[in-house]
Length: 104
Image 1: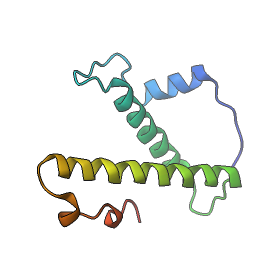
Image 2 (image 1 turned 120 degrees about the vertical axis):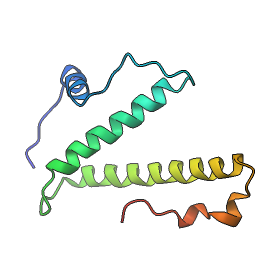
Image 3 (image 1 turned 90 degrees about the vertical axis):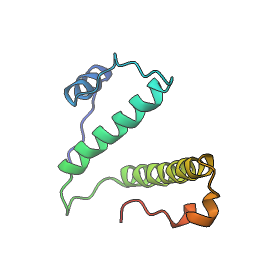
C-alpha cells in the first residue's frame, strides 16, 4: 500500500464528504460520543472498501487495528451488558458478555 499523509483540513473534508454533520445537536448530551462513533465507522468502512484481499499493511498498522478492535469489543460488550442490566434483567443469566462475537 502506498503511504500518504493527510492533513487536518483533508480529514475534515473527508468526514464532510462522507456525510458527517458537525452541526447536529443531540439532546441527550452525547454529541462528541456519537460524532466519534460515526467518524470511526465511516473511515473504517472506507478503508475496508479500499483494502485489497491480498494487500499487506505495515506491521504498525495491523497492530493498531488489532488494538482498536479489542478496545471497541470491550466497550460494546460492557455497553450491552449494562443495557440489559438497566432493563431490570440480570444480564449474566441471559447474555454472557464474553459470548458476544463481533465480526468473524
